[in-house]
Length: 503
Ligand code: MLC
Ligand code: AMP
Image (cartoon, rainbow, N blue to C red; front, side, top):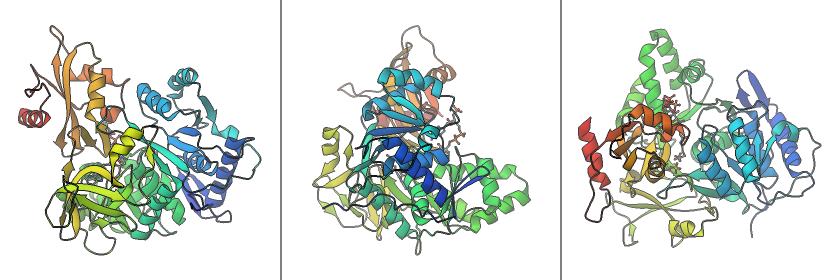
């Protein structure tokens, strides 16, 4: 029998501590709770329960974003956070797939709204400013069973369009509480949030863990090195969570600063209680460079949109460079070989499979993909790892068509299908190539149609209206032909080697 408790215990209405900081404005837990209850009431109108209607959110990080997320959860809807920097065709895919009926927008209108309006008209979606919903009388909110669906995040995979990953309130609670336990979150913690808010890293690991713990969150619309380092130097935060690219970017930025400023930043980082890296592999060199600069041992952890965080180095104990640690509390992590046998020995590569309340419910309206993702009740991550003296070490991914750039998971096939619609392109293959800043950078290998010409700059410009900036190929290699096997399939491993020699 499912429990009847909500994802979030109501935020303490008498709690005057700061929940959120945005620019010079602070919002207490009491004020946030009031906004959340109002928004949920406004969304409900005359209904008792939104009954899992998909409510999208198109707004940057800010009080409105947090109010909307929690308000949708309280009223029984499924929250669908949108990428505010996405290209219109990407938004259209998400809105259509999720069957969104309402998009909540923030009072201060985003410039992209103008483009969104005709799309909404066509799809029959209402754009609703949240100010209107906040201006209502509070009403009683539904009591939700925790197996109710709560959130849908879109993630790229081996297929060419992103899938909607649906998590229930129980999944979300499990994902939050395991991290609070493992990393000893405290009400006195303060954390900056500069990660995109359409992905689990920013939403669960930072925002939700902080609010669940009664800690405070400083919201940034995006990662801006200067702004963030100003807060670090001022000693604003006790915790810091980022993707490896952000740590790289900080280290690249420092030499340009006066020594006294560098020292203040170093001291700000050194004084923090915990610094976490994840969403992509943290290179050993980055781990050691960061330790040399700050004295901080980065805590690397491993996770996925479908599962939340599952493996982590310890808060106390050895944080091993190049390893992601051990299963988090309440999460079962096992390696399986190709014959579906469990691997127990060290240094035997196998697929990471996961079980636990943290594992998502389904890919939205895609029973086939959902079924294919599980074997005997285990979620199959597609990531390969080995055990090494009790710690997991990630070795790679089973699909060459998944690229991780700056922590974003990208589908090579999705990018290829857009590029192929360019009038000058006859054939193309997209690969990820090793890159010191981005982990992997997107590289498009292109064969042009006869008589056609194309430059990297023109192609990138053409891509801007068709895909998010982080999907746009950073490298473009024009080729006479793509290497193919006897079946006509592009040999991407060979292509990667070839491109590496071209630099
Ligand atoms: C930005 N650009 C990228 C990029 N991010 N290109 C490739 N890959 C990326 N990830 C583009 C910009 O659009 C810009 O293009 C150019 O690179 C330089 O921009 P920048 O200003 O230097 O970069 P910035 O905007 O600061 O972005 C870097 C970043 C960002 C690292 C802050 O990528 C980011 O927030 N990444 C985090 C993604 C994330 O949260 N992933 C978690 C998924 S959940 P141009 O053309 O304008 O010059 C998950 C599970 C788990 O993975 O385990 O956590
Ligand atoms: P996403 O689908 O965006 O949630 O990305 C999840 C993927 O990110 C995982 O399947 C891994 O491939 C990768 N990932 C996350 N954390 C790490 C890590 N610490 N080391 C290596 N890869 C990671």
